[in-house]
Every structure is written in C-alpha cells, then in structure tokens.
Length: 536
Image (cartoon, rainbow, N blue to C red; front, side):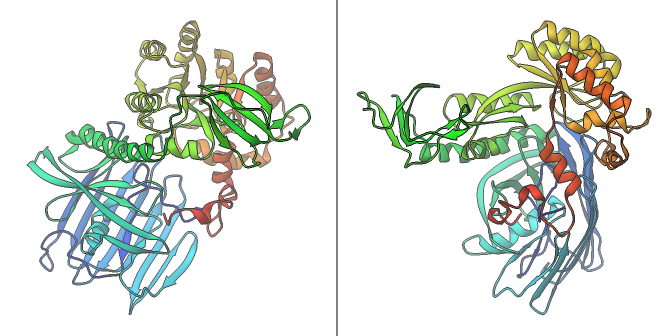
C-alpha cells in the first residue's frame, strides 16, 4: 500500500470503521458471555467466492474474511473489543490484502484520543465531538456499525478521521427471502468515503444484511438466491443518481457548436497554433477557422478563453462501470476500450450513454473468455471445452463485439482453434498468456495483441509447471533484474512480435503501482492527485 486506500474487492466503499461516539449495540440484544454469530457469503459475477464469519462473545468481536476471485483476494482477521454501548475501544486487523500486501493495522480509543497505525504510518486525533474513524483495511461488515452511528445523528452526517465527513441517506424498503423465510430490509447510500456512494442494506434490528454493487454482493448466509436482485438494486441506485446529475449539468445542442478562441497542437510543427475557432457538428469536426471567423446562423458559441483544445483521450485498457463513466468524461477521456465485463452490465451502460441518459465515453467492446477453474475470473464467458470457447467467440461476434480477450485459466490447447474461429468472424484477438504456456506459443497461435507487459515477460523467467493463475503472475516479476535482455529467448519473443505485427498493451500504470509501492509512501502515479481525493 502506498496511499491510504481501501481495497475490499468490489466492496471498497464499505470500509471498516471505528466509532468515536456512543452508538446502539452492534446487533440486537447480547447477553454477557453468550456467543452470537453472523455469517456472510461473497458472490462475484454470480459465483460464490468467499466468506465473512463474525463471532461475538462478551465484549469481543472476531471476524474471519476471505475470498478469491481471479486468483486473488483478501485474507484477513479482525478482532474488536467493545464497550457497553458497542463502541470499539481496540481494533486489530491482520492478514493480506487483495494483492498480497501484509496488513497489520490497529486502532485504539483511550481517554478521548484516537490512535491508529496502518500501512501509511501512524496517526492520532482528539475529536472535539462525534467522529468516525475510517480504517484503511477491513471487511464490509462494519457498514452496519457506522450506519447506526449516522442514523443516531440528527442530520445523518459526521466528521471522519483522518479527514472529511460521511453521510447516510435512506433509500427504500426491500423484501427478501432466504432459508430463514421472508423479511424486510432497508437500503442506504453512504457518501463521503469514496468518489461514489456505497450501497448496503440493514435488517430491522440495524444489523447488516448485505453490501451491494452491480457485479458483486456480500450477503447474509441463506440469502444467496437474492444475488441478482441485489445487484440490480445497485444498478438502479447508481443509475438514478447519475441520471439526476446528467439532467442538471448536461447540454444537448441541436446545432453546430463553435468553440472559439482556442489554441491547437500542430503535430507537424510540434507547436501550439495561434487562437482558432473549431466548429463541431454532431460527432464530426466541420471546420478549423481563424479565430475571428463569423458564426453561421443558429450556431452555439463557446468561448475557450485562450485555452488549448485537445482531442479526447482514449483509454486503451478499461473495465468500465457506471460509476466511472462520467469520471472518464470529466477527465477528458471520450473513448474507452473495455477489456472484459459482465455482458448485460456493459450493454445496459452503452444503451444509457448512447441515449443521453448518462454521461460516458464511446465504448469499444471486447468479449472476455475464461476457462473454468478454481482460479477463474468470474466475468464474461466461462468455458469448459474448446467447443464452448469457439461458441463464446461466435456469441460475441453476433452481438457487435469488436474483439475477444483470452484469460488465465484457458486451456492452451484450445487457443489455435479459438483464434482461427475468431478471426474468421472478424474479431481482434488478444489476451493474457494462459497458465502453463508462454507468449511465444500465443503469438504462434495467432494473437493480434498481448495484454499486459508482464504476460510477455513471464515466459522468460518462469519454470514450465509454475501456475500463473495465482498472484505469481505479479510476484514473479521480482526475478526480472537477473534477466539478460540480450538473451536468445528474449530476442526470439520480440522478433516474433515484430515479424507478425503483434502489438502490446503494456498497462505500465498497474505495474508501476505493484512494483514501486512501498508502505509509508505515496505511489509515484498518485502524487499529483491524492491530496484531492476522499478519505477512503
């Protein structure tokens, strides 16, 4: 960890908290010395991938949290000691984060002073009034704890430690059914911890029932059958929020738009031009004219105030969701190549963007094809045979996907036939190097593109039986310093890429974070913006 970020897979918006105020008991009545338990299932892409088990005995709460998706995920244990009102007086979180970083986090509240230690270092504060401490790591279980604290506050808003503030909004009553029968739960949105709200549900005792997102659900055991309903709720809540934002802020001009008094970058001279006027009609630039050119009848004029007009950026490796569609636009990214997604989630998002309901970039769709294994990424199409892989390519081609992306658990023996069919269908073929093979074999099989620079380089440092469906595909990069870049095996791979015109999608930003991140320092790629981000 190089910055104070929370990572709970798809549950990052529900960070653990310790409360610096009096709240109601954690879950229902609790007799001294009587152990009670709560059990939750983690579901990603419709597949059960892990658990969270909570046991409370007296004033002690112990939590066991573990899930694995795509060969990675957190393995953590938490122990809290509570006062008579359910206030954590101490909290210890140990284990490993999603990408393997060791977790050794602690919190204590003593005589009005809060002290904590996490991977960014140590801190302390003496809150003047009620405040919520947001832990760096931890499980989604504590969502119920901070929800109760916010519900007890008059305006449902409280300062957060180390900074910022959290607020809670009640959304609706929801009927759910499980092995324990039918029940009514209430959904809420938590804001202030992240760029977008996190959504979760409480039962009528105030205990956590579920934390939800469009792709993943963390739900009380026995209610796993409500997975799809809960994911649909997350889509609904997110959509309603962004529809309101779009209606308030967006303009839809039914006329040419003249952006005047702007400078342009000239790639021939490598310099900025003098001020110009740029006329846009629909999706096309109609003209680039002198700055004082008169507007035609009916045009909309926007004054660029002497700034520089640049083309929209193209994100070449995204896994876009509704929550970051507008953020892409605000960052100047107008096109995204989606490299694997839930099909219905992606198609629904594209439909809402194209219809003007939501703001978002133009999206190029890549069909995700993964072999079924204990290490599968539960995304797109999971296949059990060569024929199923071929059928998946046909499925994507029939639905206007432009490419397929092959993933880690695919059987290497199926790749040549899959690539042949995909290219017959006019699909661009790219992907990871499946486990127990190498980039040379994928290039020979007909890949048009290699995804991630590590996928190419692993073939130079791994032994034949080493399994890259695990975090080894990342941690093995520590072997690279001893690699001879002039060696025959390196030149053979690069030569084959050149000969066959195979491109590389390097995703350097990911590897910079993984390889250069150090506890107690800010990631090099984050230094320019981290101070402007929410507390999470």
